[in-house]
Image (cartoon, rainbow, N blue to C red; front, side):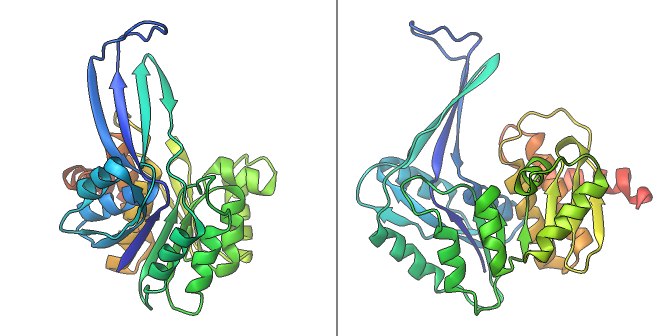
Length: 308
């Protein structure tokens, strides 16, 4: 089973306007909403790929019920801790020429409720995959990911960590199966400029020396690079279509990589599927769909197979 953790899920409410003027009533031209959170995004894309997952995390109030009901499907088991107080956050994304975001803080999570989640982590067994994605809410201890990994360190669990800076570095002593920094995060971790492909490979291998098994580096418009556990470098390009949305592309890449590896046990294929899923989300207003993923898989093979 694949388990995802979303500590602070949200409803992302997107409003579009021709112009935004403060101090008066504005009327939208269109509205959309999505169930948000990096772990939830991974579960949703895994479902499009036909893989089952269990979504862990915290929900509260009427928005929490909406999130839980909204993401549950044939491939997603929702097993959230239901908090007694507060509501799951609503993030407002205003698109009116420029983009403005107002992100909610989310409910308070106390130590008792955190322990309930840790007890669920204890159920994860040999052969399972655990995806830890996103930042930690300021109401929670900043070592919460480490505490989760500590609970399962003696089990043969594939741990995937998609986090930034110290959160990522602190996870390395648990030898995660996969980490996914981007170029900027790689630069920030080592406090050095990353100028070229050789720099990316060099510092990815430094992360491996610190404990990571596989390092997947997303490079935005330049694609992605994987340094696998055997020290082999794999590269994937980017398909050319109009980018509609970058939110969730990284989470989609993680989902595709995990699905590709689970299905084929092959790192080159995992990178390809991860890249395609990231592209699919970028080319859609929401997350990648099965139809778009299949379409882009064919294009990817046509575009890049002769270059490998």
